[in-house]
Length: 265
Image (cartoon, rainbow, N blue to C red; front, side, top):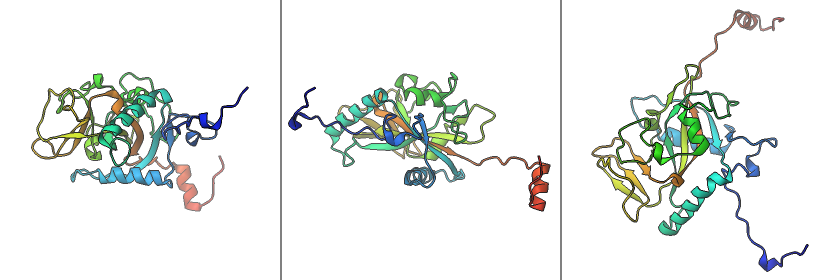
């Protein structure tokens, strides 16, 4: 077999950070769609700070972040997003070199116990579980309004930098769930068109813009970002938050703690 001359070698771009095929995301040779981030990892601190900073409702106590998972994707699901991001970057020349990509929050229904513990990492197949549906195929514009009929800026995909606002749309449909789970997504905001008033008939931003930025003012108390194409967004992290319910102490455990000696089974 012949070897190509060095001048004919083709540079292969590195795999995306959120690629399922990226070896950095493999744990003991296993690949899961959700990868738990250790609390000591700097990325945990970054996402936790983003969540805490975004909690702006004064009458809502800021909850404790319990777990953070990284969401991994097959290359086939990442390619449309990365291609769109690259095309937007050519237009806006954003300083981040990613088409003004932002990490934004989204709250939705969870019908299962995904991410309730560090080991619950398998997506469910329950039809009413919007969380697992989004994690399986990402967001779809056609499903806009399936939960909330009012669409402030028309038929699009809604996100926000305000985690406490996204929390308003986060719900557990399972009685066994005690923690709450919120999506943090990569969103190609590009050049946003700012709006201060509702515009429920919108189907996209004006020509030359890539998204709608709902600004605080006349009709909004907290910001919103709306995009109108499926390839504008991919979930990146899951933030698990709230207070864990303490398991009741058994008589055996109580006596053991009193005498500080283990009891025979």
